[in-house]
Image (cartoon, rainbow, N blue to C red; front, side, top):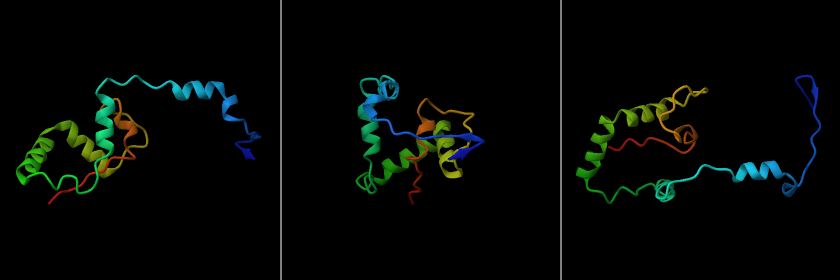
Length: 107
């Protein structure tokens, strides 16, 4: 295969022989005690999960979201698209969340 005038040769190497890659895959940042549970809760929200909430509670959440500048910026990024080059990071994890976040307009 030729790529940028280089002759590249691919060779299969068994995973257990890739010591550095194995070590790097295990080097993840430490999570705070309650952060793991929070992430699992967020990932398991399904469509219709908020049907049990009273309308007043949903309106309260909507108002709080409208007043929170970080939430407004995050919502804008989700709707308009994430930049190809990240120059602004809302928090330490947001740049990795672009593939799983979406905005739902509740009427």
